[in-house]
Image (cartoon, rainbow, N blue to C red):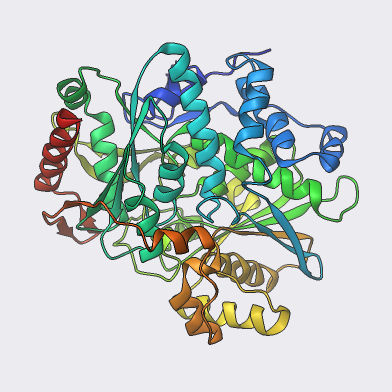
Length: 487
């Protein structure tokens, strides 16, 4: 089997195996690991038809084995995926709502979020390679809502892994917070004075600081990532659309539209990869909230990072999506974060020194903003018409698809619903007049004690939003030093 390598988006000559890319998290030059378009496996129409009777785990094997078969023996990978995607622990439902429009409910896993899917694969793959190498790693995660809980749950109790999660204070729901703070053990949850972009900058700085890792752990490579910047999170997100296509009612080879509520662009990027692997996706609808950097870029060709804006779709409050660098790369461009040559601190985010093939990108992707009021009106409309309760993120996927249909004929479509509505009781009640039931697992967590570490220092304020301050970075390093020296 071909040994597929992964290169840095900042230097295509820097190549790693999947195992090395997974363990490193981010390339030494701060690029994201990416697979060359010409190396992507291609699935024939016959192969796609054979997936109709397969389970999620079986489809995941078909999609991921071409990437991993040279590094994980097939029987090991099969067992890993059967464990990760056991249908009793993480069932995946496809619901026909109306007139060829389906919802894919990625909401039934341990933390009731789509992020369980990538996190469970990531955790098990990481554990596999660490066991083979007899190594330990500390996973550093920034979260805008659901990532932290999903990754923490997936890594809880693993012998060779610790997990540090940074979340923006006051910007996630109590239920989301408790999915991280009640686990304890090898999970260390930090509330950060700032927004998601500050948390992400904090994670990126730590991941790139080899001296800090050496000082604390005696290992330059001890820190790794489980955010969307990790290739271990990216690849399993290419499985969703293959599964959806296998279960919807369609003709052989029929094209469909994937409508994806998008924040850090992991799901969207996974679906772009799937399209390039032969899946007949006629259009990828990328719905964003009031953080409109990407649709503005498609319209103007200019990428401008602004201050992030609050939204009911809290996991999508992202003004500079990390995976955009991968998307730009796939379409022939180059985007990077300009850094101070000495401190490595980010000076400018999202610098575009080579533009992508924008015409091709717009041919494949339609992106539009859904404002805050439209979140609520969409939840109400879908419930009134179909008795289906969406969460705020799923509402973005539904509304964005409707906006696409305003100028294009309706076609077979799948909307990704990414979180259980019960995780957002206040927003759902505002829209439909009642609170949805809180998922049972989360009900139990409300009775458990929390362990919270805090980054209290203030971020910097700028014209483009909040920025990580030197004092915040120093505070984080000091507290991590205290935790792991004691540990």
